[in-house]
Length: 241
Image 1 (tube, rainbow, N blue to C red):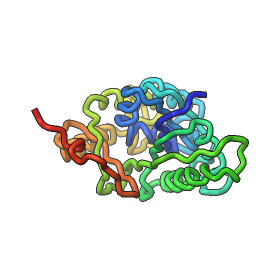
Image 2: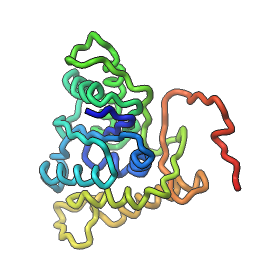
Image 3: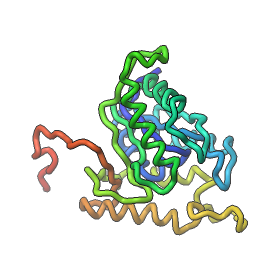
């Protein structure tokens, strides 16, 4: 199985696409083998069956040009940072041996997302301990990068996704059971904010806001816990033509 340079984690199908999809697509386009993992099948969501969401997850991965995608079987709504859940993620990390991980920022509205952040961070460390035996060689990723969800943060950096925003939105639209669809008929019982036209517009508005912060059309913000080492500061500030 091909090793990955980049592996992005979300608690549910669509989390990565909604919050970091432009960057993940950009890395794949740059030639880095890139994948994503959903910890759950999204079975507790208001709409959509696990089978539907698995198909949507696969469709989104194809649109994004990913090398791999995996859906685990942690319980939606009850994701826990327990031993067995950590071992499942450790096995994934040792299978794909990624250099960089993406995970949700630990301060967030949905408890599964916060727990996903903890799980990925702890499993990434534990995966480097050879005495934790999964029948695979130990592997510890070099860095975890956190993407922004409900609560904003002061980013460590912002990625220009102006060239991948349309592809990101196409991947988001692959989740027909979840995202606003003008042709769908919703009852009062199955309406959610995510299915509203306002939510879809907010994805664009947020990308415009972060893009404005760095002088481009669209951006995605990210946070790392540790200071970033730089050998040549001038490379961070390319000369303008």
